[in-house]
Image (cartoon, rainbow, N blue to C red; front, top):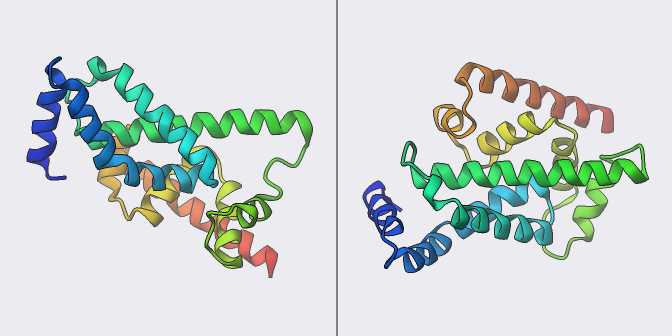
Length: 183
């Protein structure tokens, strides 16, 4: 969606008569992008669908909070990242109640997911990513999978480009070490 189309959509979202139809366009325009961003963070299709639904519910209920300080897409990505992190924290807390090994079995969980079409290496990469702290995981996913520029990630996460570069570098190092330990 071009910047001009997005601006027109934002104007329609501000008009109570056009708001519902405009939001339907938002859902159609951004669902796939947001789904894959969320999916890379939460891993399974069912969880990604649940988080995506929460993202759109939160966006709809907080439309009045969107003050156009950033693009609509950036605002939606920020909601998606925050909802994904919240989901992962809740999931980690629930897992801690039952086991001490929170990150074990990520590869097995992925392979068991009917929607996972990757290979063993992809499953291991996702397992390595799951061991990263939330911020490093988010930065790695946005940079590696979405090829997002540091300047865009900086706006999305409200942090400096230098801090993001450091987080990405550390994440890559940890992932490399994870693979070396598996060899």
